[in-house]
Image (cartoon, rainbow, N blue to C red):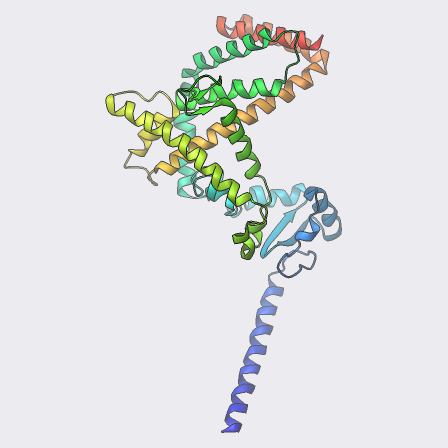
Length: 365
């Protein structure tokens, strides 16, 4: 009997050794990219430092234009040359089209229900098609021209009223772009611009703060995403903040959608006038590959509000800064505006462009 147990133990050890060698051999055959040896649990997170892109550049000089790191338990491949980037972004783009499923996508984008965090697949392609054909079509954008002109006039009027006083341009640009985007996307601002107005669900400063928090939480390094065993501890507090932000935005989006559904119920033959109407109409389409849920609508609206307000304001701010630093560019811009004004018969365009030119010139003095 003892000999039998000894024989079984020997067979088990032999089999285990064989399987270990087989697994090791297969790993070698994969020809994984070179990289630093990872530590247990944390992987190579200790090598990132406070400026990750600089740390990755230094590592690429040692390990080459393509290398593998471990972020916690997850393998990460880093491309550090145009040729390698092309392999990821063009040659094998389908394999790398989706983002990893991080906490930010779960809590700030309705469980990956928008275009930013949704995995590449039927819903993502359908959402892109809806955006291109129903939201960003030339006809649809042209229908919002009156809104853009009116908000530009309000923007210039506010700046003129502050003539001779210090102006934080980014604040006024954010107010302008947010007012324009909400009217185009939601049909109305749905926020109050003064503290005395109690009729709106949220104040302007509150909505701006919510969007700022959204951008921050979508860009932070959340340790629980990469070391799942620590996720429940929420060491950095990001999980708690994401859940709190979700509740605030969910209340806002539910209010907007309910308001539109009430109006649609009163007038069933109404023509969609804004993006919320378009998405609600699409949600009723039984021929869609993926039926649009309420969370899908919220997620897509969230993308438009965030992407259309902050990024536009930042782009305009930097463009104005560069123009003011280059007087020759101002003269060239004036010539181009004059030429376009002569070629078009749109009085509204000419008026807004002249205001922009005057504003740039006054700030450059």
